[in-house]
Image (cartoon, rainbow over all chains, first blue to last red; front, top):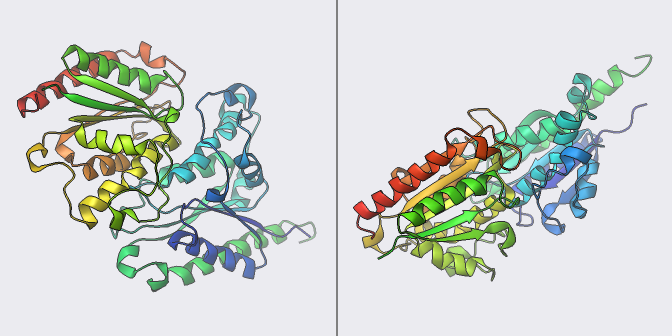
Length: 208
Length: 203
């Protein structure tokens, strides 16, 4: 038997239980219903600083900063599904979410400079990344500038950028609860990613 | 009247490429008679936006930190410069925190419908985005620009009054010193902006 599918949800919103965290919770609920082993981290509860740009990790592969993010970043390498949630502030992810992503620089250094970290295609296929976001504005392009940072983050940490769970126009809907489909779709997405990974695990078990 | 320039060096790395680029622009502006103030954002007490939306009713931020001072400086300045390196395809987190704290201006402008600058100063402000990136990709700055535009728009700087100088392919500290045109481009940009602000009657 393979282990259960491990799911880590990270909330990058400074506001507790707002639209984005509620949407993240729906994804995580769906994942739990499908048998996933789910954990949620709320960045605003943590004490951390962002990347200092010192580039020490380019030589050592280790971040010089030791704070609450240290364990979170290591946890990321041990899960099958990584769900990063951030509302859109000023056309991008929050400073907290960007702070987390920038701190992942040491993975990048290990991959591309020290070359002592390598994710096989199979590893990437088995590790799915999901971006959860909400935006007050109804513009179609309101998430566009957030995607490249998420792409970089999932690439660096060995996850396939599997899907987005995003909902705009929150100001008009009066919050995610007023959105006709967002929460149900989020829950379904959480369910299906766990089912998908479980299927891949079973298919590759000896004797399958 | 002297042209008032407020510049944000947001990189966590002191005297790295984006700050060098900024220093070139500021030196050329000072040569032209402008008064410049440089804020080192990573060393200032600027906390991230809490997303509480209280500024939508209070017309000010609930947080008391260095933004109290910067709020007034942002309104007073004729030219605002944001200098940020590109980290993971976006502004560095320190720059993003600053941009997000401009939410108080967005609330003032779009929710409370109050003025940011007096009418006679509208169209007489310039924003400059200076950026450097290690990657050589030509699209490496694309995802940072919408957030930069947000910042400038909410403080009454129009699209046509935003200037960009973005240098890619400079990674290790000081690499920009060896760039063939960056220093000259920075000086030319500074001269053009000072000339423009004089033409519109700022000083």
